[in-house]
Length: 482
Image (tube, rainbow, N blue to C red; front, side, top):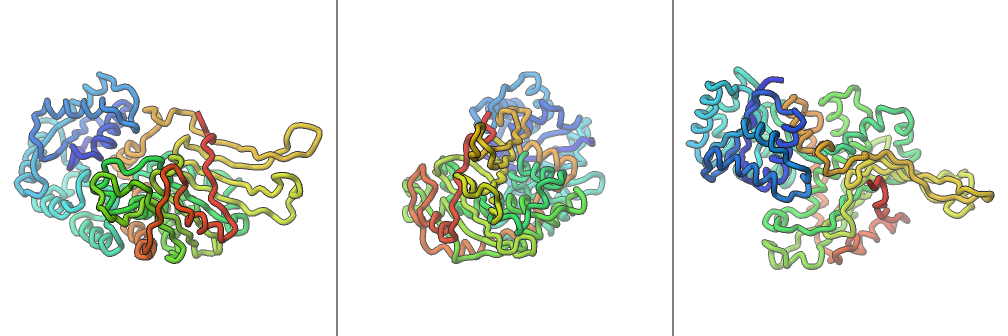
């Protein structure tokens, strides 16, 4: 693999500290960083080379729920050989001349930087300045190597702003250079859905309206916004996780089989689902946990949603009239993210008169925690009588989710970008289709219902699904428990 320079704008940001720096360490320990690769961090703060390496060390040794394994001295020392730092303001053109000169200097000393990946770990309001100056100083030219751009969600705050940002991106980069990152697409179980569905011949024939009663997707957290009030209060739950993570989860669970395993083919099938989604503004509930208004950097009379639940349909032949119920929120009963496929109960089912005989079958994709794929079925209890009981068949990753060897989504996606594989990144059409679906729901927000911390949200969310004679499935935390 060719050597290259990874240039991180905003290396001192919260994102870099929590996600990027730990992921780079993990990649170094696994030997996933190409020989000769150079890592260049940028930020406003002045730091010497030694101070920058100490900063890296401090970040890696700071308690981090996403990164809880030992930091090996020999791995860190090897990583340090790759580290470089350039300080300056991202809205100052002088910084980019300084960066260009530094890249030329590194190349002249045996650290080739013609291949470049820019990672934007900074605020979106700086993007225009960054792109303009990157072009002004020819840093985006691909004359003697590739140039790629990794950019975090959210891509815009609604459909109009997303289109503007995508247009801005395409003014300076080609689509095949842009890696729009939604870290959920790097999660092991989400990617494994494709293998489970399309690499086997057992379940895929059942994933359609003839066999499925409805689909539920839950993304619950048992904690609040913490110190993210300045960001979160401007965005809310629906735009933070509903517009991206959960719609991508739905796309993976319901897309048709791609013609081949390639970026173009997989993305095309995801896009078809996103464009077929029908929003129902009259079928959405917004909530806010009690105590949210007391959080740091939250407006006194904030109407920001920390919970939402909605119903939707996929308007295609395969899933016609199959309702999809999606919910997410903070300070709920459990931290869990999963997709549940609820199957129909056939009229001619044997044993339907016995206790539990009319329980539906469930297929659950548990994204976190205790990642795995679970099928819940009815079986006979041991004994002389015919008695039924729900049982589970589980495929589980028998690894500690905090283990270094359980790939972190950022580690996986950075590795994909290095290889030039965009399969698990979003393209412009996907992002815009997601906003086209979410905007009508967001615009329908007229009332925020309060709910208690530790609950499953406001009662109105229960009423949303119960009027269809269904109920929310409480996640089983014993699934795939290590």
